[in-house]
Figure (cartoon, one colour):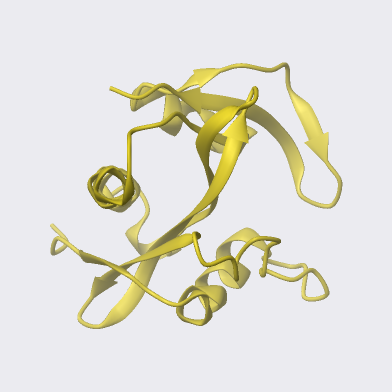
Amino acid sequence: MQPKPEVIRVPVERILPLRQKILRAGMPGLSARFDGDENPTTVHLGALIDGAIVGCVTFLDSTYEGSPAWQLRGMAVDASYQGGGIGRILLEEGKRILDAVGPRRPWWCNAREGAAGFYEKLGWKKVSDRFEIPTVGPHYRMLLSPV
């Protein structure tokens, strides 16, 4: 059993290596830096075990169907820790941290096809047909309503 990670807000530079390794594997020319990473309202979280970043997620101040929402981007867990609950813990801590920022709002993301089941287990709903993001692969738009 792996130790429970500490989840904290981090600067984007701390999570870029993990994003590159997991989300841009085999794509050295494709940056793991995303539009909105530098916005002052963007929240970057890192899951740390023994001081090392083993998971990350980013929340962008966004809209969904014209209303305020958080867009989840750049969710990644180091391969050696996948399946151990790090992703779930990141989202739980994200909820706690974002609730402290302001009123609850929906979360949405473009989930990779292989990750859609993970989000569905946590209450997210597919709100689009399958679509392709060039160089990255098939995705679904997914939504988590505030609870």
